[in-house]
Image (tube, rainbow, N blue to C red; front, top):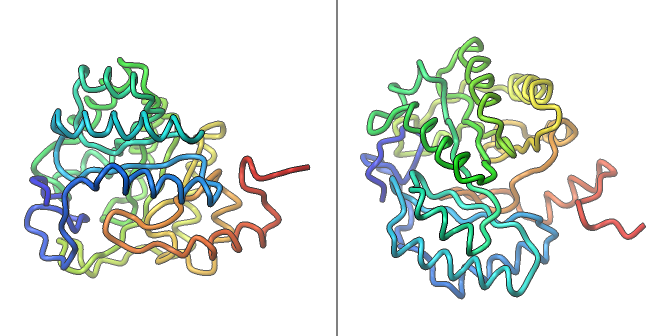
Length: 264
């Protein structure tokens, strides 16, 4: 479990969610998942840790895993590992990491209502560390946690000033046992409007829909896919995502081709 008290997270301190608890997966199991991702035409493989920040031991293991994955296949590696130090980033870059995920999560004024164990500024400071080390950043937020339209727009402009490499958009999954259990203030139309706003603000940045797309968009996922550049394939941190075959069918039904899949 994590020492942070993020209200949306089933792994957070104080969460009563009934989830499986385990440490960092064995190296061979992580590599096996990367192979599965590659076989399903994924261009990026993401590895996530729970907790405030990675230990040096975890960094060492991740470096070994990244090096081995890069040796056996061509796929980008994205890490979501919390607050990270300069010296740790040097090691990860040497191992071959391509990008690091660190979301702003929710607007500055809304942040104390969602998390009290760290601040919005802590998030910005970490993005600055990543930028200082010339690491491509994957940074977005979670919609549906009580933010107003005005706050959401302010957050989007804050994010734009960080010049992220990619922007993942999450829609709150009101997981049982979390502080935000039962909250459901999003509609499919509001989700689409948020995506359109971000598309206009980030015309040349990779825009991705991630957690909550199945739950909130339902049959309107097809419209969302036409707005963005990519989707998060497979399961999320502790919640099940759509079956890979269902997402592939959804994409094919729109007449779209997965990057790297076209033979013509």
